[in-house]
Length: 72
Image (cartoon, rainbow, N blue to C red; front, top):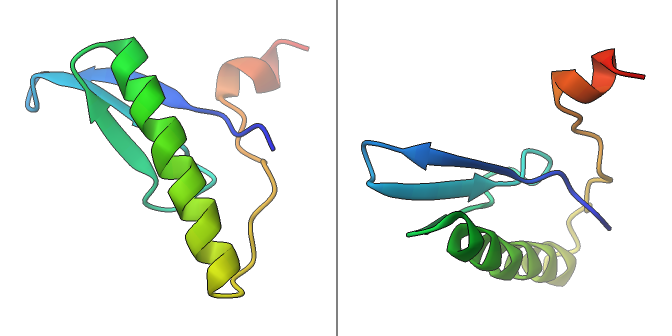
C-alpha cells in the first residue's frame, strides 16, 4: 500500500520529520529529507507488522493533501 508521507523541517528538533497521516503515530526523524524518508519507511513496516500481529485493522490509504483535492 502506498501511503502519503509528509516531510518537513523542524526548527525545534533541528532536522526533518516524516509522518504518515493514515497511520496514527507513525513518524520518524532524520538529518536530511532522505534520511527522514528512509526512517519513516522502517517505522511504517514496524507499524503494519505490529497491527497485523495484534489483529488490528490496517487502514487503507485515504489522506490526500489539499493541493491534490483542488487540482484535478
